[in-house]
Image (tube, rainbow, N blue to C red; front, side):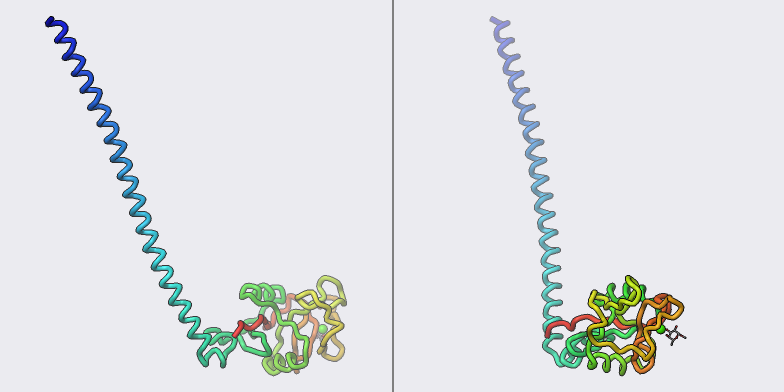
Length: 209
Ligand code: MFU
Ligand code: CA
């Protein structure tokens, strides 16, 4: 009789203990879950605030741009009132460098500002450039470095069929070493060694109005 009671009690005790342990382990799981939910919530809130800051900045920039486009400044400076070093002529923007460098380096420098060395294919454009260069030497996007005597514009187009403005007696490939062209006195073209250092002209399409 006594032994049976003792066994009963022992069983109850074991059961209780088991239950307590189970409860404790599930509690840990719940706490962990709650913590991760909290973490996710915090991350979400943080990213939401970041996004809202970004979007407000974007609208501000957009408004500023709209204002620029509608203002008179943009009519006066079609290449952008904030980029006055780019000069507008006939649908294009031109940059006349303030530094002298080789033809190759000039080519890279134009590309770095999303433009290319100037291609001249009309008398009007030649006039604009020669007025602007005032007898100083400026690289243009013309060379025969790939095949001697075959002068090509930087966009791959042939220069012999279209407009040309070579100085009398040029290109003369002096010293068999003149593969790049610049504008010289009176804006006339001359071939010179590509490592020669002079100013350069970059061109790019004007932004839409
Ligand atoms: C040489 C050449 C030039 C130019 C001039 C008329 O300089 O290097 O490219 O052809 O003659 C003295
Ligand atoms: Ca020459």
